[in-house]
Length: 278
Image (cartoon, rainbow, N blue to C red; front, side, top):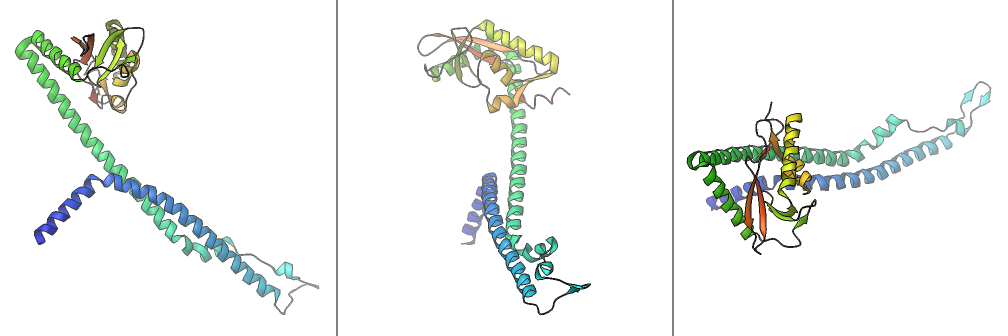
């Protein structure tokens, strides 16, 4: 029985850890709405309390039996009539806003905590991605060292052919870009488009020019040059002076027997590309 409870507790802890960002975000959204509602309700109640207190003061002044003299002239009721000061109003109504303040504090804490957790997860993914990139590049370099450039390119071409065969082009998927009419396949994002080898090489030269001028360049810049839309992933990776860009071409046949130009990169784009050249 105890063992089962421990297992359930561990499972619940795991689920909470895995979904902590989602839960905290939901709390932040709900807290924003509840804070607005509670603030509105508190405002109405506060206004009513102030109105009642001022009515009480008016009533007491109106029914007083004494007239206050000022020199030889008597003071009328309108001259006696006063209103609560700002500090008096705060002292009267501050308790009404406690629920709204508590909800606001909880909302802010949820949003800040969710952001911290997300930042940690993103940092961990970036580190893992960097390790994978280095491992992949070391593997590629070792293949070239062991078997030579010719056999390494042959393996790359076979992989490109398998990718294209397993992902046949659909007329609705092919993006018409530029003036070229050669079917091309981007191995990194799995997208088909039309272009020419010259246009792709021109885009490569443009990126390398950016690298020489500004030390770093994102993958999105390359895709924009060949007419493909950037993605969230392509915005977060790129090249720098220590990891220059080089496009690799593989000529393959598509599933419908059309010549296809598959493009890949000799060195894959890396995360934090704009920090590695320091």
